[in-house]
Amino acid sequence: MKYDTVIIGAGMSGLAAGIRLAHFDKKVLICERHYREGGLNSYYDRNNFKLETGLHAMTNFVPRGAPKSMPLMKILRQLKIPYDALELREQRGSSIVFPGHMLEFSNDYAEFLQSVAEQFPAEMDNLNRLDRFIVEHDATRMENGYISARKVIGEYITDPLLTDMILCPLMYYGSANERDMDLAQFVLLYRSVFHEGFCRPASNGIEHIIKLLKQRYQESGGELRLNCGISSIKSSSGKVCAVETATGEIIETDHVLSSAGAFETFSICEEKLFGEMLPLEGQLAFMESMVIPRADFDFKTDKTIVFFNNADSFDFSNPLDMCDYRSGIICFPHNFKFNMEDSPPEKMLRVSLLANSRAWHTMSKEEYAENKKTIALRAVRIAESVLGLKDDVLDGARLTDSFTPRTVTRFTGKINGAIYGSPTKYKDGRTGIDGLYLCGTDQGFLGITGAMLSGISIANTYLML
Ligand SMILES: Cc1cc2nc3c(=O)[nH]c(=O)nc-3n(C[C@H](O)[C@H](O)[C@H](O)COP(=O)(O)OP(=O)(O)OC[C@H]3O[C@@H](n4cnc5c(N)ncnc54)[C@H](O)[C@@H]3O)c2cc1C
Image 1 (cartoon, rainbow, N blue to C red):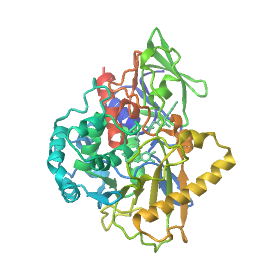
Image 2: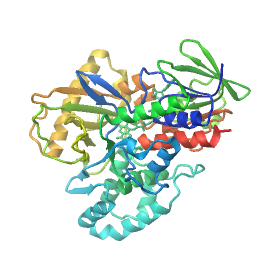
Image 3: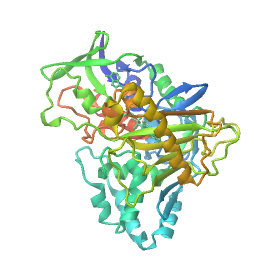
Image 4: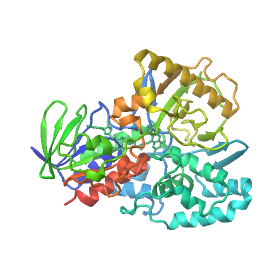
């Protein structure tokens, strides 16, 4: 049996690409190493609670009937999924908290502008000029290489504090680079986060999206194999011809589309034809701690997401310590605008901190368990202090859990647990091997929406022939 395309990975990008190909009657097989679909954005059960590994919020919210050109509408049209099927609920509002300054934003961009006007009145004209640049910039051009976003922002914004406050949520939601980010990524994320905003499917969160994608894929005729890791990509004279599974099965195919990451994909290619295309290893990883408090606990905030930085300047880099306690993300998945008939998630606190992947990967099992416990506690204490709560979130808590870069590597194969992949991106999706393409994180489109767009655009560009 020979396939037109074998897709490596049933994350957001792999599933979206699969739907496109299956819909156009291509013979397509998705191979996923894990026992469940979703990749970085999946879910698991713990003590009768459903926990999500990714989804804080979906970016790129648009209301029903929004123009077809908006990213989310494009995705839905391409995947033939009706808008209402997503059951999106908007965020209540989010904030960026730095010492002495707070910016607030919602899905109404005017609120962000108003907040900047109050905190940084002298920068308003500059922000409006930056905004015009962002609207006009074509961030999807495949041929663009890395351009420093900080450098370009510096041509408009003069106050470094405002620059850091704008960059903080965008770096946390998608920079594979330390202390800076790629301009295209900055532009896409600025639009996704500030112009369009956050939302979440009403019931069942990410599980709902995964099930929708899987259903669309399978009803279009696509095949899916779980627990099916690909251990080798075979090519002959520079042209892909087959993949080998971890159990030694050879599957013949004309094309391979890999969402596993650039480094991860190149390392399983039989022919090493990449030369200067070899990627850098991803370094930026996170630890996330979750608490479901006692049922009557009140977090005393209706914020959806709080991006915080307690240090004098914002340093988005691989920490020397196990985690960086100076900045992070606090997320409340229950703080979306749910309807009466929805069953919103349990009240929950999620705290994400930058983590030193090497340190987490190299310690013994015993040290690992101990560090996980003590650092998760510290993360919760930091969140309490940012939120002005007493140290009581954990009193009577019904569940605590956390995951580290080591967990991410274990379940998704991501090298160093670096969720935003390699700093080297392959915007045109090509690899140097004929018939082998990259999609998702290392093609350069991140997050749930970005990954789906990536899968769709690489499938449309190369695999419909
Ligand atoms: C803690 C955390 C919070 C996040 N929060 C958000 C958020 O709030 N909003 C948002 O939009 N995004 C968020 N993201 C990011 C988002 O999850 C990712 O950017 C996106 O899901 C990436 O999708 P992908 O398809 O590119 O890659 P992945 O999800 O990494 O999918 C790749 C798949 O390939 C599989 N695979 C790898 N190697 C092999 C192999 N050899 N054989 C077979 N299968 C293989 C993996 O198991 C995986 O399923 C978050 C991520 C994390 C970890």
